[in-house]
Amino acid sequence: MTRADQYEPLPDDAAARWAKFGKSEIVYYPMLLGLEVEETRIDYCRMRLRFKAELLHPGGIVHGGAIASLMDAVLVPAVGSVLGPNDRYSTVDLHVQYIGAVKDEDVVAEGWVTKRGRTVVFCESEAVGATTGRSIAKSVLTYNVSPAPG
Image (cartoon, rainbow, N blue to C red; front, side, top):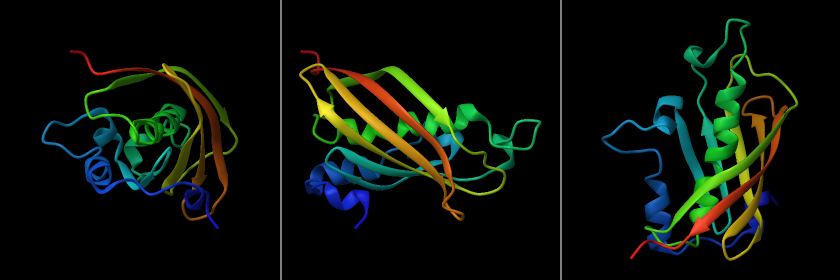
């Protein structure tokens, strides 16, 4: 059993919407990093950061900022999985613990909601080396949620 198995599948319309995350004609930050959604469920997402040399810092390992961005971005579909397409939400707190370094492999992160409130959503995420399975980072995040304007 994987962590994803603990979460209900998305309705078809929501699954189609989140399958497009990180894909648009305008190049947004997740696209610059090379983030790819692999699976989204209600309150859950798995995402991949493809390795590329541009993500390395001069010490020869993937920059911690790229890892932190993955840890945050993996929660966007998880938090948004039960919200409407025009509802607004954003990270208000992100705490990352770096456990290992990445030199030359993709990184896969899982993110999940631990508790939903009316305006606050609490989350966690973990990242591992895609090939080695080595633990790279863990994080705890808080999102603010507000209904669509209008």
